Length: 234
Image (cartoon, rainbow, N blue to C red; front, side, top):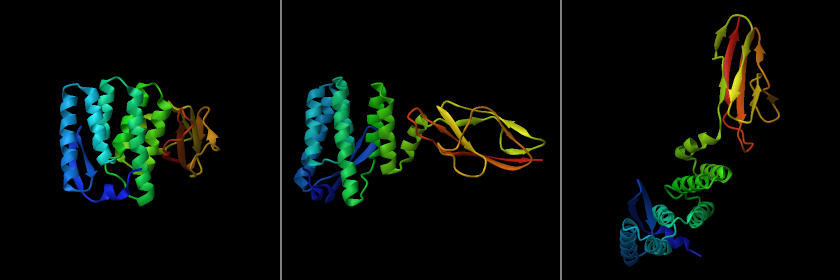
């Protein structure tokens, strides 16, 4: 059981894998110890001595259980050993800890989104898109990270509407398509849900103003972002 006081007192910065992560540890001796272990772990990793690298980085997490970059380094070591399951377990452990600290203190550990992205990538490599999607969505709910939102776009298909918003003469036929399983729509300015009309062919709109709201269902039964189109028919 790690102690909250140990996480919160002093911060040092480690630059790694194109990101910076904070380490919260107490006492100058512990700072020095963590820094030495980190340097040693990096040496082992660069020499492709993956077992020693993993063991050394794990000792850093014993000092500071909230270092995002060190978790990612451990994953690199396990991937070098071709031990994907162990890499996923490490990421799950790190995610559990940052979610717990956020729940107890309402403090979000900086760069947490990289753990969710990494575990999602590993699940994709393992052929489990459902779990990959689950962790991206879980991470986005926690962090509201723009980066996670970008990754989630791959799992939320858009609707292609083949009549741009605008003014037209005479009634118009609207055709739609999507890579999603289903398309739901409304024309009464309400938000489409799974209880709304299911697109099964063209939609005819007549004279007046019409707001078309559409959304696609993804492969896991989740709805994506609603898209709006506005028409004025004379």
